[in-house]
Amino acid sequence: REKKRKKKLMGKVSWPGWLSFISAETAVWCLCPWSDPKRQVYVGAFSSVSTGVAVMYMQSPPVNSLSLDFLTEFCINLEKLEMDKSCRGLIVTSSQPKVFSAGLDIMEMYGKSPEHCGEFWRAVQEMWLKMYSSNMATIAAINGSSPAGGCLMSMTCDYRIMADNPRYSIGLNETQLGIVAPFWFKDTIINTVGHRTAEMALELGLLFSPSEALKIGLVDQVVPEDQVLTTATQAMTKWLAVPDHARQITKSLMRKPTLDKLTSSREADIQNFVSFITKDSIQKSLRVYLEMLKKRKG
Ligand SMILES: CCCCCC/C=C/CC(=O)SCCNC(=O)CCNC(=O)[C@H](O)C(C)(C)COP(=O)(O)OP(=O)(O)OC[C@H]1O[C@@H](n2cnc3c(N)ncnc32)[C@H](O)[C@@H]1OP(=O)(O)O
Image: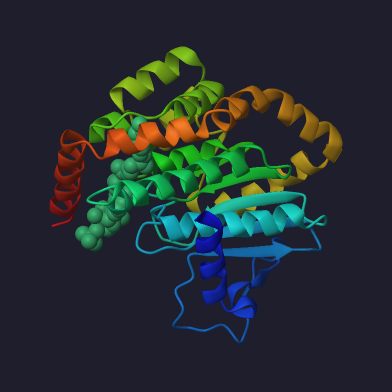
């Protein structure tokens, strides 16, 4: 079913307009003239062949929530970059103001059929598996808030740079929504900040300011907002100075046990998610949370 959906999505896409190119050095955005302005672009992959670094801008207004279509397109972009031998590094950032990613799209989990929830969860797993195991050196340029699934996505990267704006926050806040982060979210944050810090952060559903996130090691660098992307580009040179094979094998040594745990239990994890998320009590928690989000806005 996933293959069919991917095919359908790719069929809808006008390929030349889908990809635009940017030079990471000059950061000049050159949209292809044949881009269809009406088409909603969820993810843009802008690769710079000269530097060997791709910059992927997430562009799913208003808050880059990770919907099924968004995740599918994200993974297609990733696959293409992974296959491009000239591309050795990837910077993931957001083209939305103030938000890196609002995490999983709650509308994909609220009031949906078990089949839909299962398909959605497979796409979330796929994004995590592809990013966490990427052969490219990956850097998250976190230029806005990054709760829950947004935090997970940034933690799949090798290095994280966040804007110093104290209004922004990052963390796995699932318990605040009345839901439980699955074992691979838990493993990823343990691998990033250590067991004790992860335990407190997860149980309390903590969202950290950029300076707090730096203190606990959830992000590696905090810089002024307008310098996030240039700092990421500079940091990338350090990662690319290491011979690819040595870096890739070492990355695999560090991450393979965590990846294998999900790979060997994907179907059970999907079943677990579907039976959990479709429970009346969990659906009620999601409804209350969605109402709170809308009220907060007003
Ligand atoms: C056994 C397994 C269990 C399953 C475990 C699954 C784990 C889930 C992980 C998740 O990722 S759940 C999602 C968690 N995300 C959040 O809690 C973030 C919620 N959003 C925010 O805090 C804020 O929106 C923001 C990201 C800080 C941005 O704030 P801003 O003021 O710029 O924007 P808003 O006005 O709040 O939002 C605009 C618009 O977007 C809607 N929206 C926001 N986040 C989401 C979302 N994650 N999914 C769907 N929709 C979202 C928000 O309601 C507004 O909608 P409208 O009122 O404009 O219709």
